Length: 445
Image (cartoon, rainbow, N blue to C red; front, top):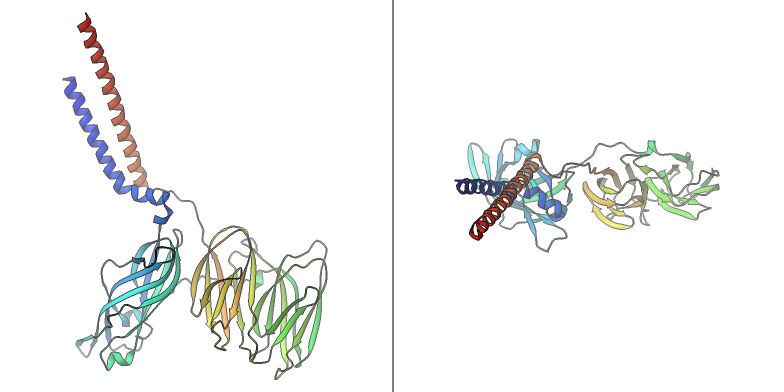
């Protein structure tokens, strides 16, 4: 009877253990494996869809079928593409042109992505009570898009399905022009008003070829390690001016618009700043200058936001703008790069990051300490004015439980079942040994 009871207990506990293993594998393993293997971690990515060219087609309905969207992940083996769409989606372009809609909500492996492949398989045009099919190119275009997927910060992309309206209505052919951009314009306010001012001069007007010198003093105990210089004034063409700090030997040429420059150390002493107006200027030039201490992030400025405008010079290249900050905490930062006109190159610590001709967000890992950022106006050399905006947003890494409650429960269940099964095995072995000893004594007697 006891043997039958012991066998039944072992059978029940073995079943309990097997069931716990299955539950643990389904619920907890998908969360535990990425914890030990960062390459398997994922982040949220949403793709909204719109159409900038469908806004004038209120009397029509334009239906397209998006078969798949794939993203190319940088740093993984060449040719590796990550799929996002499980099923095809039909999109009506006139509706999404007025109100963008969510096309994809997916989780992608964390990392940097640089390209997208968007497959559109069918298109049709509804007008005057009839539906007409449209010819769709068979090739799948590769669309550039730069974004970084992290565990903490979700990414929203905007897919613009534009098209040639002439071929749509006349040739009944749908020729899409696809573009993807990061939709992540953060709320911001210019940081200039929060900076600590060292000196400010102007506005001052000088004739072509004229110059003006102002002086400021750094007192003992108020020495500055790096400073930001803001200059405004001038206009297009030759209506520019130069700035020279005589004691440090720093010189910036061809300034016009609103520009930022990074200066070096200012020890205790007196400094002379000379402004010279281009002698080829067609009219008098008005300018103003402000000098600030380099801010610390986040104690001085929580979310650095700076903007500038460089007007197109007539001859020599536009000067390189430069900003610098002391970062008090290391980590990931989303840097929103917006362009109002023209284009610019964005560098971090003199390393190229992005050529910016449309609004985008890049993510950088920044160590604690000082970092500089360079803005090169008119990066393409088109001769246009350049208007730019840069916003730095720290990506918080708030602590969170590594396992969900369900995964914790599944793990606890597995530990409990394994413990009971092991305990039963040990007790069974002890009973068996006692029986063996008792049998041995009986035989000896």
